[in-house]
Every structure is written in structure tokens, then in C-alpha cells.
Image (tube, rainbow, N blue to C red; front, side, top):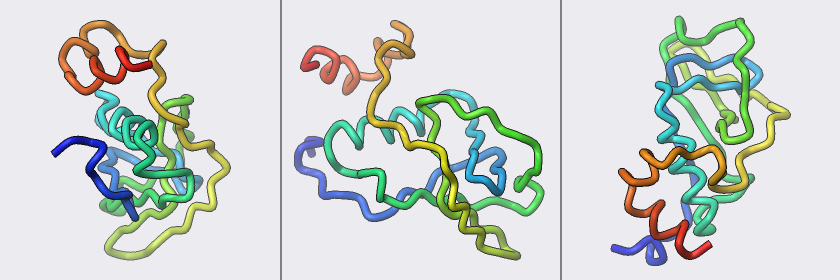
Length: 120
């Protein structure tokens, strides 16, 4: 199946190492969730209105500040076994792929990025 054939996405469930109540999210550090989000935005499969949810253990809900960069995905809803948090965050969602932040090694490993880069 080609990306152009995929239907719009109604909800994103993002894995997280830690999440703050303000919607800041810390992933595993590879940036792959952020890239998937950027690719989906590039193809119009999602928009800023598409809700982003993360399911976590209560210990992963932290009060420390998490630095958010332009490519980081904030979460709209945090779900633990104990509660559902609606973050009402003010962080902007990524607009797409931030080519200047990708290194050549990552570009070489991900064929869809190579194709999109040629098209842009």
C-alpha cells in the first residue's frame, strides 16, 4: 500500500517514557514517533486537530519540566490506570518533517524519507 492510499487518522497513540501534565512528552530518544507524525502531516493524514494520546503507568506521569523542541509531539490526553488527564497544552504540534534536523544516517535508513526529500 502506498502512503497516498491511506485514509486519514482519527487518533494517535504515542508511546512515552514520561509525560508531564502540561502535555510535554518524552519518547525513547530515537525521534521515530516524531518522524511518523511529520510524515503523516506531510501527506495530510493528520492535522493539528488530530488528538494525540499516551497510555502510561502512573510513575511515568512526572512533575519535572520536559523540554519540547519544534519536532516534538505534545500529548492532548494522558491515560493511566488511575486517571485520564486532558492536558489543554499550549505547545504547537509539528507542522511536518523538519529536514534540517535530520542527519544523513537517518535519511539513508528510512526509504520514505529519501523519496519525500526528492519530492520537496
